[in-house]
Image (cartoon, rainbow, N blue to C red; front, side):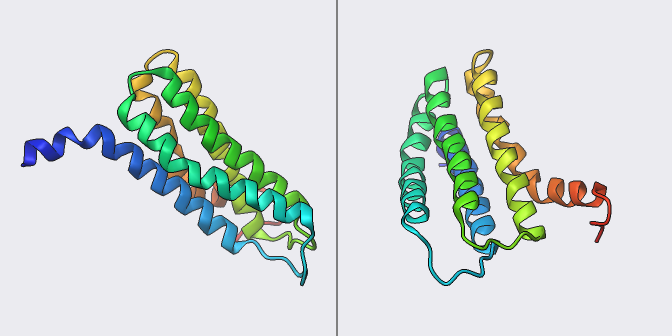
Length: 158
């Protein structure tokens, strides 16, 4: 049984990365605040696009789990996560009366890391598709990177 479980690792690792990416996206989304009582249609349409991209993550995860040795599977997953980052940036831009605080800064940093890790995975897949998914491990460092960047900004130290 242990050998069977170890054999599933190539299929389970993409699931873990997907969970981390989505978990960090959710945490970043719930921490950003707005003082607006209502939102417009533009905001709602972008949120719907965000939701469909989130629901596509299990599909792109399965594709990577089954075809990790093929670069197009990595491209599909990276496109899914990269589009999630881009749509999240747009949502922030159209959020009425968004509070520009350290939580917003943390979300922006984590989105840049997600976008960067998506692009890195695509590039890495051209060399070694099987290992390219490891680019998404960078997302684990997003909270620490945000704190480090904030400490470097003048007048923004904790």
